[in-house]
Length: 535
Image 1 (cartoon, rainbow, N blue to C red):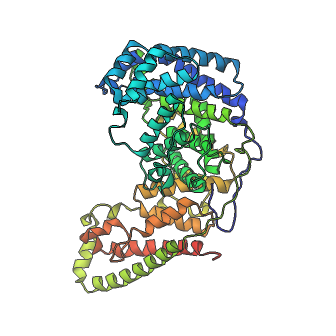
Image 2 (tube, rainbow, N blue to C red):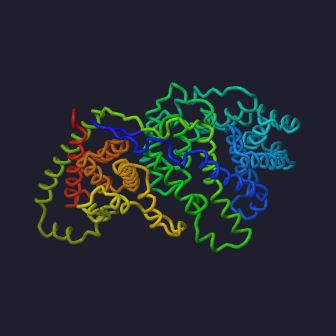
Image 3 (spheres, rainbow, N blue to C red):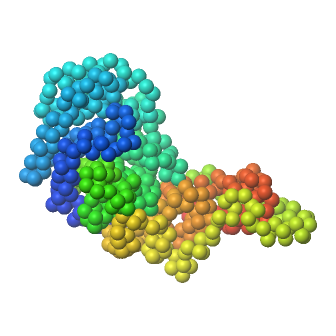
């Protein structure tokens, strides 16, 4: 959901896009189901090449089995599936039944009752799909009631996972009321500060509290805040080239049962563009060069290990979209949103500028009182300054002043796509050119991503320059714009200097402390003009 000041942004598509229609979604889903079926029986063989897993319970095999079961569960919910999908679903259910109820699975369940939810999930799903096994069920129910599943502390979404699995087993409704205040979906988290694990916590919490889309998000939750969090995550994962996270966040956005934002629409366009170009979805750790160096079964095990999850996510997303009706609003204009700018942020910007000016004046007087030769020596020896001070590069080195906010500039600022895309630059150009968004929508998505990247890499000059440019050119003010502004002003030290590099006394006492602080303060003045516009 876009956050705007005195204006609105609307989707450029009035109707549901072709790539979201059933005739387009089923072929993608079928490809994933075939991928799962072809590899499921090979897991034990593949595991021989996964040498970093030493404890049997940590084998990737158990994780793959559980996630295959979830894929089957979501596909089984699709109303009126096509014949090929129905046939593949029957095949996968049979394959799962032979694996998850094997002697090895029973041994693991007896040995590790504390992992009963992971070891038993596939059995529970098969039982819900009318394929019971009474003997295995006895073992699982005993393991689930021993207390070992709840014996160790976990993060909130892991507790939600356990409650969701337990509810599936005992056919009850899980209660997450006590966990919601502790969860990331009720927090003010933003990708400037989040880890990838935090982003996965966000997506998984929404999966469990909605039963993977079967029930709506609880009315007690702030959908607007969650939408902003998902949008920011999509902007971040777009510039980070993280297709796995893009897929998970799109799944989360769909669970909200709201019209897709421009961030979601571009994320979907990016995902399917790469999918169509490569024929599969590479995971974040997949390296084409490594794969090319392997042969035979080892190569097969590598490509499965580092692509299966992203392709499963793509398949699950297709299943969820097929489970929903076509008139759910994804292709309709996103509702405009107006955000009341936090007056505390405006005051923080005003204080930052005032303190920065005071610092620059006082520091100039201090430096002027020093011996001319000492000043000259410092100016001629930039390498004497501590880390980060000399690494800051002016934004002008990256931007063409006469072409600000063109998509060419946005593309130039983005990091290079990994070489496993083969024709990465050409593909990226096609993705931008064919994006089903208006230019201001696409610019906002890309620049939000670059703001997040600049903040995470602590490149304050790029961060401040982009914020000021966005302010001068009146791009809509997104939640990321506000978060990035807050991040910038909170980098100020008690002395008034702006930037963590001035914690080092040697840096603080250098002439650079004045020029850098003054430059950042000037950018903050431009940001202030935008924040106070119309107030």
